[in-house]
Length: 429
Ligand code: EPZ
Image (cartoon, rainbow, N blue to C red):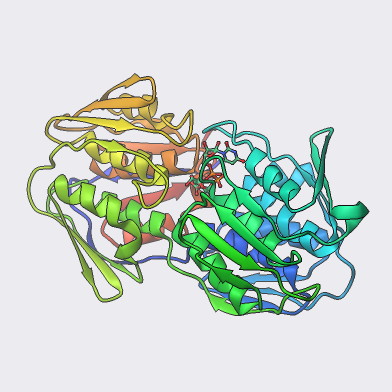
């Protein structure tokens, strides 16, 4: 088992770091290639395990995929697609459920393993299924699989009005892709508004669909009047959560001064506001973001919310930063039911944090101490790494495969900013 070992040097991070393409944009866009038979090319794709998993899924379905980061090419279809996504692949990555909408829209049927829950919550997909039923799909659940069939035993989906009971990112994305080939108009209401959804809307329009309003809470889609869409060639947007993670890392030690290259501050306004309130200087410089810390950190209160609210994917990283702030922070998680697993690990590093229901009460301390800690999910593991940067002594973050799902070359990027970080092998899990 691999681990990341961080030695707290006491020196602030300084220098430039290039932000990779957005994992959570690349995943739905790769699934959107199923809506076309042609050869599509995706650029600025991060070299992450989830990309390999998605490529393996597309290959299982029958498409030829070449992953050569930062490019991924889905070749022209050479054989019929088998619209089935097995448990063995879906269990590796919940976002595999994003093949459901494209498959049933294109082939009239799909058999996709229910993704099941994960460390941070139950993660149901009832909203995805409700939307597909509104488009005329018959949905059956059979031994852990979703069996979806278009109208009349496999016919074409019909445009519909779909109302989401709550904003769901992949639910919105699945229904956008389904509606892109459904017959007639669809209106999706109470949609998630993340920048990755706006990016998917751009792709579907490049492919010949008519999508209006992606990135807002109401999306209008006119399904293409043919049975497939055109291929595309597209470079995806930067990863705002990776960028936010490095913004918190830069603020961990007084004197930090880091430029994030190819990062979009507009997608991180809620985080930037909170960091500024905490005393961190954040500025946009062209296509870059500059983060400077010059003085003590002030405690801030945060409640996670759907975009454009404070992102749940940044909660763990900000909590790590607040462990060293002056005062008490109240950090409330409203999106997932179990997203404080980083707290017990941070407590082992000397953090003073109490959990009260879905709120973490963090009392800032003057210093953290290095320790061996356990990663439990993607963003929790990132929070342990950035805490290790500011801790006295050595921190070893185990089960680092969680980290590798969302952070490309994290040790090289942190080394480039002056951190003493290395990947070690053969550590017990
Ligand atoms: C996406 O997950 C992201 N993943 C997550 O990022 C992110 O944390 C999450 O959105 C919230 O922003 C990808 O984009 C691949 P949701 P998703 O559906 O779509 C409930 C990371 O760290 N819900 O927006 O699965 C759900 O339980 C990952 O990169 C239903 O009840 O999240 C949750 O409480 C982690 N029924 C809330 O909605 C449904 O049918 C938001 O979930 C769907 C969701």
